[in-house]
Length: 381
Image 1 (cartoon, rainbow, N blue to C red):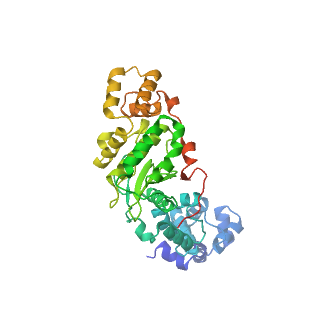
Image 2 (image 1 turned 180 degrees about the vertical axis):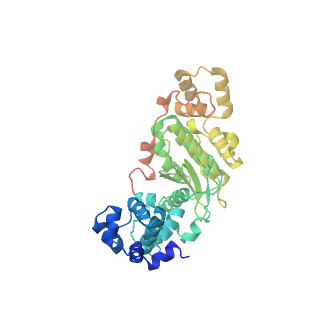
Image 3 (image 1 turned 90 degrees about the horizontal axis):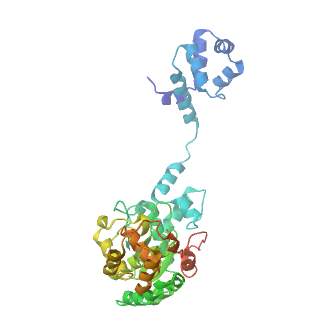
């Protein structure tokens, strides 16, 4: 017995109806009367200009003693057979969208849009600097951390990191040396007491041999920051400013400096830094060793754990704004950094003193090479 697909290559539903009418000695007008429809409807079905709807399928089934499904299946197979194949465009686009967040890349100006799928493919390959079939398996020289599942970077994360790698070449920096991180820490530490001082961070980093970028995150990346290395082993630190708050900024920056100090990610792919501080911070116990060490580095260079633990032991649970501000003053940091660590340790609720968690994205993006928030940089290849 032929399948509906095979029948559709030779017979339309109309031709099957016409043949059935001839065998029964009925006219098209007779069938119209039997079905209670206008003769033009039967004529349209037989000519193939009138699709068989569910109601018509039920009516035909009653007229010929078949099932409605029979006519629905025949109609569907016929219409599919009549529709020309789009020359593989759908399959090719599916492959592109599987390996890269194409729409977001176009929206952000990372690649130009194209109606021709082959042109679009060429632009995605140029962006990643490799063939489409290598993007999924390609490893990136980057150090980062993921909050839930630890595994390879997803397509959006790879695109974000690749954009960082492209833009890194546009940032001038002094040569990187073994003392660069220590020099950067010494110069950054005095900037932590006032929010507006973050504007100096890009210059300090460049003078210490570390390239610094701000790139808005993409949907499904949830990246706070990352450290990657250029082919000539120069470090690049990228922040996403996913949470616009001062404590987030400093902890993430220092965490990435910890990766630079340890040279994490020079030859292996680690995971992206996500949810490092605040009410969505990842519990330290679930982090891999490389991330715990980077966290420890960040803590040591903001408020040392021993100082923070001592403050908590003395004050808990009476964490008034006055006490927090006094402790911050003695530590030489902004109160936001104290609040961020207290939240991370579970000593205070995430809503405590939120007015002190000042926003700094507008300040830092005013002095750093920035991609995002409506700013579209030219393609740099």
